[in-house]
Image (cartoon, rainbow, N blue to C red; front, side, top):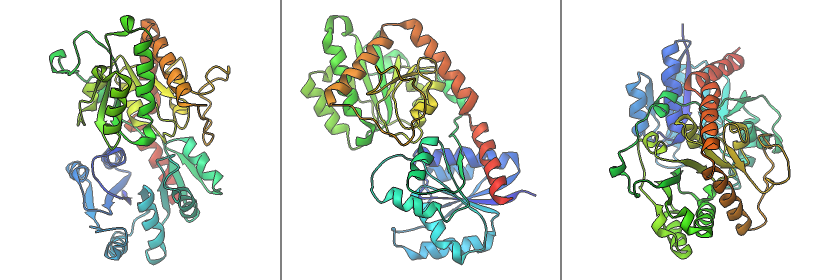
Amino acid sequence: MARRVIFLITDLDLGGCPLLLLRLVRDMKARGRFAPLVASIKSAGPVGRGICAAGVDVVSLHAAGPWDFTAFNRWIGLLHSQQPAAVVSLLIHANLLATAAATAAPPCPYLHTLHTLQDRPRWHWPLSGFIAGRSAGVAAPSRAILNRLTLKGYCGPCFTAPNGIDVEKFLNAVPPEPSQRPWPAGSTVVGYVGRFDPVKRLDALVRGFARLLLSDYHRWERLQLVLIGYGPMEGPLRKLAAELGVSSHIYFPGPTAAPEIWYKTLDVFINPCDVEGFGLSVVEAMAAGVPVMARSGGAMDEIITHDASGWLYGPDELSGRAKGAGRGAIRLRFASPDAEADAIARALRTLLSDAALRGRLAMGGVNRVVGRYTTAKMVLKYEEILEKIIG
C-alpha cells in the first residue's frame, strides 16, 4: 500500500518551486510507492489547479498572513487526519510551520528542503540552521546550499536532490516565427529568461553587453540582448541601457508561460547570478540545445563543466584554476563593476566568434541534462531519501 507523504509549501503561485513540486508529486503518484498530498499555507494558486488536474489532492490552509494561527491549527488538524508517514516542507516559511507544529502532531519524520543561496534576509540562514537541527534531514538541489548550511553549524543528514525538468518539452519546442519576434530578422541574439531581481545581477549583464557592442559596433551591429521575464529591476535596467546608449539593441518581451519557445530563439543563454541555489532556467536552456554562459559560483559550478557543457566566467577565470569544482559556500567577487563587465564581454566575444564551440557546448549541455536533471531522476532521488528517513 502506498504510504502517505504530505508536501507543505508556502504557496502554489507560478514560480520555480511550485512548478517543481507539481512535477515531483505528479510522477510520484504515478509510480505508486507513495501517496502524495500537497498542503499550501496560502490559498492554492494556479499551480495548485495543475496539481489537482494531475490527480493529487491539494489542501489550502488559507493563511491571511504570517501570524495567522488559524492556519497553524488547520495544519495540525490535517496531520492528525492524515497520519502521514513523512512530511516534506519546501521554502523557509513551510519549514518553520512544520517545525513549530511537530510537537503537537502525530510523530513522523520531517524532511526540510532549501532552495536558495541568497544572503538576505539576514535571518534566513540562522533560522534555517535552527530548523534543520529539528528535522530528520535536509535536502537541497545543490551541494552549495548544503555547504552553506553546514557553515551555520548544522551537522545532521544532508541529501542532494537535483531538480528535474521535462526534457522533451524543451528539446522539441518550436520557436516563434521570425515575424513574431520583436527584434530584427537575421540578428544574433543573446538573452536571459527569469525574474528581474537585484540578486540576478542583470545590470552587470547589460554593462557587459554594452561593452562588447560598443567595442566594435561595425562588427556587432546585428547583436541583440533579450531579457524575458518581469520584476522590480526592469525600470532600472531600461534606464541603464539608455545611459549606456544601447537601448535600441535590448528587448523586453515581458513574462511568458512558454519559456521553451523563447530559449530556441537564442544563440547564447546567459546567467550572470553568482548565488544560484540551482538555476532552473540554466538547465532548461541546456535542454533546449542552447549554449549556456554563466557566472561561476553557487550551483553553476556543479551544473556546468566549463568548456564541455557550458562556459563559466568569474573573477578568477585567468588564474588557471579548473572550473566546475563546486566551491559551494565560497563567494568570489570582482574587483569592480568594470572588471565584471569586461569578463562578460570577453566571454561573450569568445562564444559568438566560434560557431563550432557553441555547437559543442550545446550538445554537451543536452547530454548533461539528460544524464542528471530529468524529472524521473528527481522523483527517484526523493523516493530514495524518503525510504531512508522513514526506515
